[in-house]
Length: 152
Image (cartoon, rainbow, N blue to C red; front, side):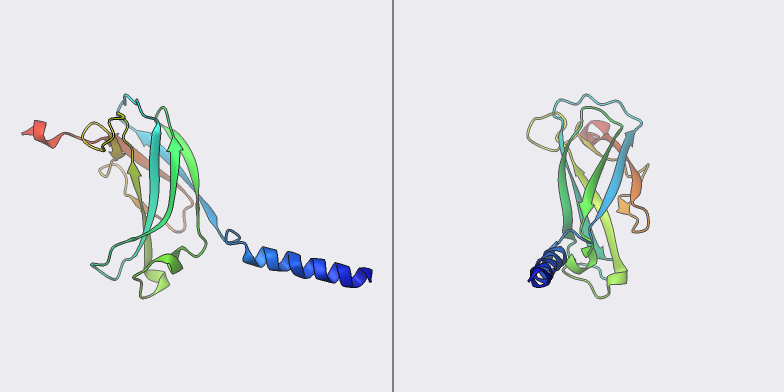
């Protein structure tokens, strides 16, 4: 009797573990730095990870993961969970080995309800937005979105 109860409990435990959608997930550790100084009024930002097939042009990228953070200053470090089957989630992909991922930072740092010049964004002149699959710790640089109208 004890052996059959133990067997049933073991089977149920095995089923629960195999159904865990996070069992193959990985954490990506993101560090955000800057060369600028920021006046942060709104601490809430969203970081999104998108995936796409680098061999196919045209189709939109697929949202893979998204997380809201709170930061009162830069630099800061955060981590986010990325599904272990991220390449399977990309809608338009020919081969999984062609999967490439990038991040988007949305930060209405002045708190006016719009992301516009004066808010904080990735600094593409200092760092790429591409996440390297082999590197689970990456550094990204942030800057103030310039007001291109005032440059002219």
